[in-house]
Length: 425
Image 1: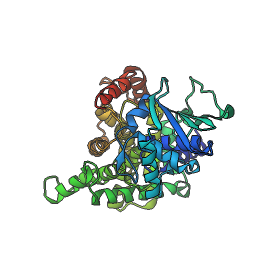
Image 2: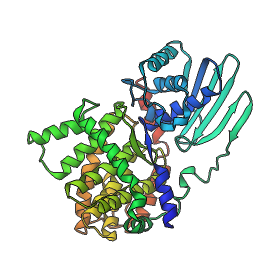
Image 3: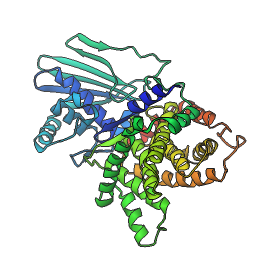
Image 4: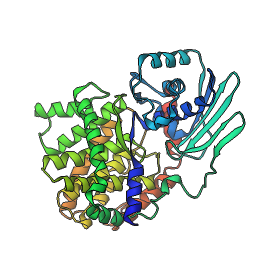
């Protein structure tokens, strides 16, 4: 795969979002539908796929101190600024929040489980006194597939069941392509990755200061000072990364740089690599190349896992990407980076996703520690061979068969997980 195609893919998949991407995508879709009405919204029916419901039910909404879908829907209807994309909730003020609460109190919002095979699907039917608008989004968080108002269709795209949107520019990328690109691309072309890492570091700093979520990162950092955990490089990387997830999942209003549609994936594949580069006093070039490896490996693994998945994207794809970046920073060869992939997927590939919420930080903490451990093993040329489990000698085959595990072996897992979650409602 050529350099330009990989760079295009990287820039498309690394982008800014305000809040957890699933409920924010719902806010975006609702906003787009309500903009058509040009008058007061009378009712909103929102239909969501299993994965969208699972990932949006329990996560904090930025600037509200609240969790869940109803507030995300109401805010989208009140704000009506779809041009902001996934930053639609930035600069939220008290008047907007009050208007959203009034809409919720009036019983205008109805959320439904969509009958669809798409893992990422949002349909909004918005009604006012004189108008009716429909918006549908699928496969990516802002990928519009249908938009109509009062029977006039503005846009419609037929989804090809055989070709996913997420495979654009990606279906021929390989592990070796990623390594060749990252080792040789001119660093000015990937300098935007540093901006993303700094953005995510700012959220981490906030998470270490504030009492967000389960305070996983903050308490790990505090344990270091009390000698409950060794004051070492690994625990520092774990604390810094988990703290950013603590803050994000609890509704911290600061923007985050996402990777492959997920803020936690962006956090997990950038912060351990960025922090390690700083601690080891690596050059800016080494840091950027390590970030490129980490980001692209995450994107590549997520291509096989799916945009939304019954397995934890941040904990598996994000930390495997980070493990590759760490291995590179510590002088690892291409072969050793392959070992790092196999070590990680042998270790963490069974971690389930039971929705976006504060416990995501626990999973991230566990797997960042695993990333450091697996990188160290890889640097000693230690890795399982293909007689063991789902691993193949070729890391590329290991990654592709992880996709088989997700799409065939775990085909009904999301429905089961959501059923368990809904028993508490």
